Length: 186
Image (cartoon, rainbow, N blue to C red; front, side, top):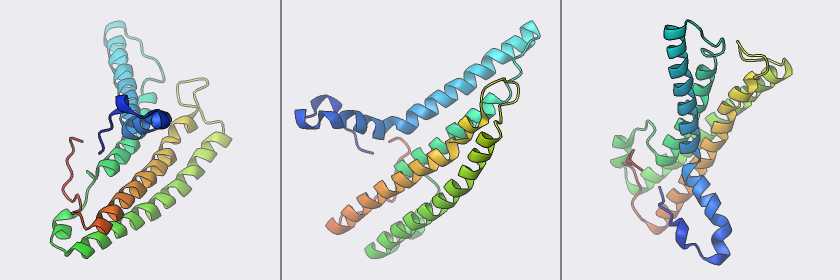
């Protein structure tokens, strides 16, 4: 997306610099931490299992639960970069207004689906919270901490959809071409 120059912020907007950095990097940081945690646990436990014949009882549970954070925030990053699955070949053949209406329809569908996911997964988080569900193999690591990944990431997905919709509206207003062939390298 945008490549902000954080070093040259004006004094009046310096307080926005951390927010811009967070907007650009939040998903990447969560993905990196989740992946590093998963990989580290699996690596150490494989060594311990094969060389020392010991294994932490939680070593098979925590990586799977960290995968929730990795996947859902990865989905948010793909929505932000517009690298999610889409039918752009059809869209690119439509007239300009048709392209815009398809982008609006996309946003409406993402928001509707996101609202349903958030609604149902909050119930799952509350159930785990109310039942004091702990991660198998641990004494005090709560499952709901990991289950919070789904509604939290979907809130972020909806936010990213709204950001993209605003950018699409600005392009439509100025009659600029839409970005229908995004790059995964952003």
